Image (cartoon, rainbow, N blue to C red):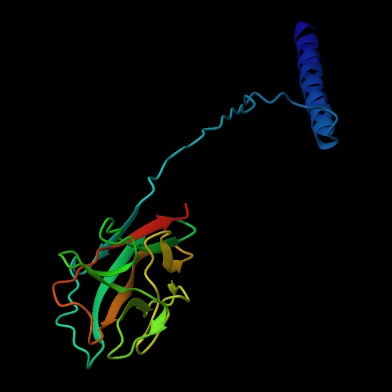
Length: 213
């Protein structure tokens, strides 16, 4: 009798387990029953980093030679001498090169070639076309760099020259962009007349470059 009861309970237990598994399977299939997710939810965190830096302004002008020699002036020719200058800068807006003559007061405050020993004399600078036999002195500018513009006052050819001023300094060349090395040329020309005083003449020019940073 006891074996029959145990057998019946075994059948009930097996049947109950089977029914339970069947119900769970149906619930899972119908998405009614949700099993817990034991994987931890991911967490994030963010921050910002501000980066700063500085770049120093750089600009320089150099010349091929610090002397320009017009040689022995005669009434029969236009004397000429040239010097190249190079500009380097990281100025985003480019640069301007200004040309200025030295003030030789008290000998003379006028721009030109000067004989400083007595009797003093000056070959005055002027915007003109030089002619042998007529005293004159001036400057020209040229460049082969497409980024450089020579100022109209000095953008001359032949024996035409622009006046070199003592004050204010005159715009000689310019560019609107930074450069690794723009090259331009300063040319000086001079003539004398038959009554131009004999002796040694001199002048001192200053080229100043100003950047647009």
